[in-house]
Length: 171
Image (tube, rainbow, N blue to C red; front, side, top):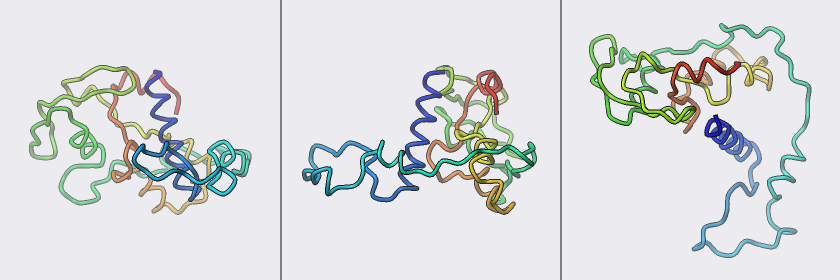
């Protein structure tokens, strides 16, 4: 599960970088010009984290249906789940009528295994829907929650993992 923890930390770091413009999130490439001294440059990551407001999270009102997920946004016959499976395939599956996937293989980040059957896989939200709810999604519109749950544009937002590894953790 260490790789899952690393991916969640990467996702959190990405979210923080998007939420805090001007925050130093990554090392400067060797070919980039030298960074300004810390007192005149952007805040360091730990300073930016310290500046984040802290609030009590609440799960009040959350249910498994709080987010509408696995929709067919582009109306091609494949739901978000299947779109993620197709996008993350190590070797591409054949796509049949009704978006039935045959063949192909996938790498599960959570338990470091390669799987040859889509039926043995889950598509997991790297930041769980319950955590999003606790952290403010309760105030979002149903449309905003649907967009979050089905986001295929953010790297690592949806990850293909074995059903066993995904279901062994809490929401």
